[in-house]
Figure 1 (cartoon, one colour):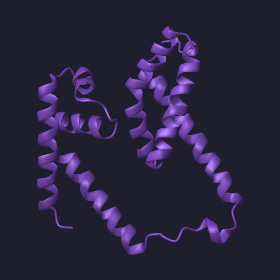
Figure 2 (tube, one colour; figure 1 turned 30 degrees about the horizontal axis):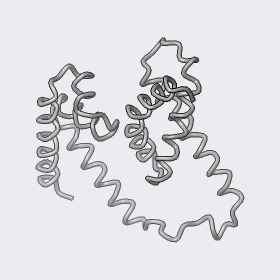
Figure 3 (cartoon, rainbow, N blue to C red; figure 1 turned 45 degrees about the horizontal axis):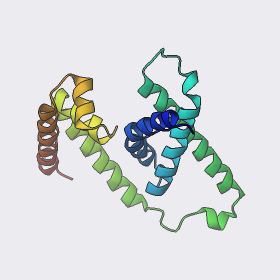
Figure 4 (tube, rainbow, N blue to C red; figure 1 turned 90 degrees about the vertical axis):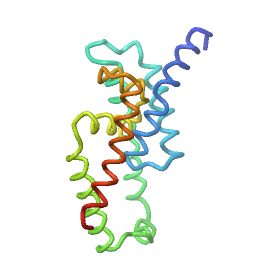
Length: 169
């Protein structure tokens, strides 16, 4: 790979790798798998960069490739699971019905608490936690100064903690 192409790939990698790793992890992949899938997606982005038409944002195009990589991996794993004997396909650590119910209740409490946050705080927090965006990237997207983003996220976490402590389990 010539030096200028190497630098182009490096810049794409540096910008998107942490975000894609978080994306794949949030899709249910283990950390090592998330890293491998991030590399696969970024290599596909690099090889296909000539196909980007510019109709939408580059970020959206990258994430569409990442979604396809995740979907393909889940399909591949599903086919591999179908070929396993039934006794090996059922994991030993399946959560009990009580645990699943408690998890659903905890999720509902968290969603309710998030809904009570002011829109700006919620947006900053979700972009940071779900999308893995840096403070600078959040500031650019929401037209906020970086210190404002930091304060919004800090206040959102503090308020969420307080709201969750107030709610009965």
